[in-house]
Image (cartoon, rainbow, N blue to C red; front, side):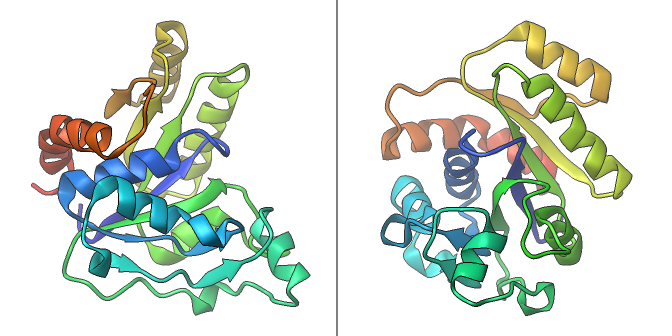
Length: 211
């Protein structure tokens, strides 16, 4: 797989951060969140570090730390900033790198560029996180179609939350994509759960990405 993967989702609040923590722990990888919008006191980097228990030295600073919990283009504008693709640089590391996006693929960074443009700019394959809700089939298939149209490699499709075979199976069939794994609904999200699931999926990830 090379240098790393970019974790995106079919929307917001569907499990990118917990999945990123599990992937980081499973591979003892480095982690980077290019844009953090809001929650600077409890950022995704902080959450992933706490959950994964990977050394803090393997966590790289965000390129943009924005105060307002909103779409990056709006958060940046409120601070008289413009997010520019050319300012992003992959962290220098010999380790595998987990990069976590903000929201879904079409979240705007500025008036021209989206998270999808950032992914293409960084030249990383994508891990797409999907979760069942009314409309998630449409959102999943559209996201997969966007990646295919841009010729961005798919590192894996991950379902998060309660199993819904009728949803997951039709997404897999219509997209021609077999899910990498399914993370069930976790009643408690803590270091122990992350460690358990990291150990469970580690062989899958190493076979898919590191061989």
